[in-house]
Length: 234
Image 1 (tube, rainbow, N blue to C red):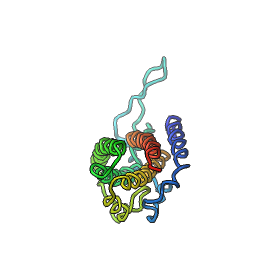
Image 2 (image 1 turned 180 degrees about the horizontal axis):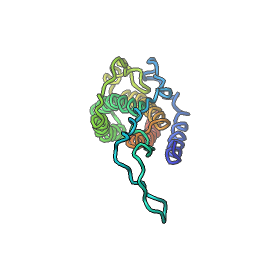
Image 3 (image 1 turned 90 degrees about the vertical axis):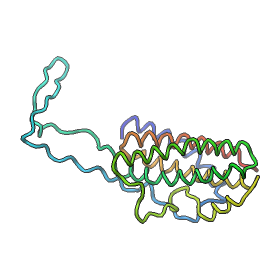
Image 4 (image 1 turned 30 degrees about the vertical axis):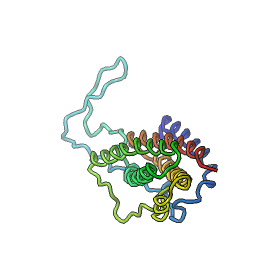
């Protein structure tokens, strides 16, 4: 792990731990009946090692140290020290975050004509404005690597923070203050799950784009969690 990634992870983890202190007070309605996946132990399958260099390949020019001339080296003697572009946990995170964001958008859309609190509607608008385009970024990441968006046999309901179908039905049926209370509790739990998923991939993922995306998710959604706790009706 690089020093830069270590600093990012330490900062994100500190925020997540601080927010987790108030989590249990808000978990009255969520996907608590659904088993949570062991995201922290999800295997990170590294990209295949590069094939051995062809001995007949032309020599490689290796720059010298300051004041020294460049030298030619046989291609098979030049080791490729570049890290893999992405690994298994990078891919898992991207694939899982798409349906996770999609449910957040579904919940936020319900607030348009059900919420009694303008600040809750403004929060829902912000979620739609940020997470909608982020889904496009995630899909583009998969497409650029020739990867599919789905995972055969995976139950998305088991992801951290995902709300059950029954909870979603109750949210859709609620109105006014009842909706606002339910929405804030469910979305807080949903965001907390995303922060955990982002923190997990920051520990062992290797793709720079995924690292930047996960850092943004963890920091921005942590801020929104604090805001939702302030808005939660007593």
